[in-house]
Length: 257
Ligand SMILES: [Mg+2]
Image 1 (spheres, rainbow, N blue to C red):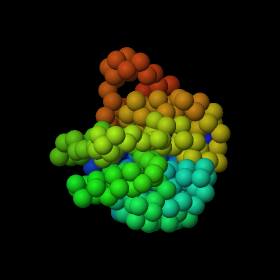
Image 2: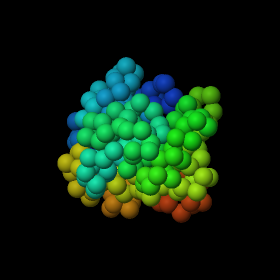
Image 3: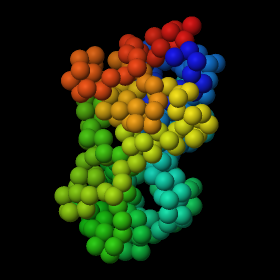
């Protein structure tokens, strides 16, 4: 792993847990940055790149918005590159709306939308589902940022974007595309941001079925850290084998010598 020129890092379970940096993560990130490019790749769709970087800066991490890729940014860029500037309506939070606007899309009422974009929405309501349904029945296509079922917090697991995607699916509208991890689209955009080909980048994540599986699909070597969701015994159970398994990010940093 010493020859790698870029490190793509998941955030929750790798750098932070809830609102706390993981032990040793601040200096481990600094060490990685002396070895190559670092890009953070998170499925969290609720914050923009800028807001994600700011939150991490407040915790002491040296991270700029240009080093952050969120599933909201991936969705915005995917739409722009594949379909051009589009009229969109969002079932999600502010960060998703911001990234769509920054990428040149126009936020419109659901009945005028060409795309409904769904991410995690902590204020999901029946009223919002009515609006989404209006758009979808009017012919809008459906794009999802990610479908993480739950995410860990110090208070336990909470419902993730998958709950919101599932609500639309329950009305008969599955998403055409789910761009976040483990979809290769998310990793390809992270690699573009890093400016490094997949064989020269290492994916570091705590979740086998998203971080590790997705990175393998684009030809990256991977490192599972055991400081988050997945455990050693999950490797065999899920049949997803990372290139390396280490206890945490500081252990990875020290292996780089
Ligand atoms: Mg994670």
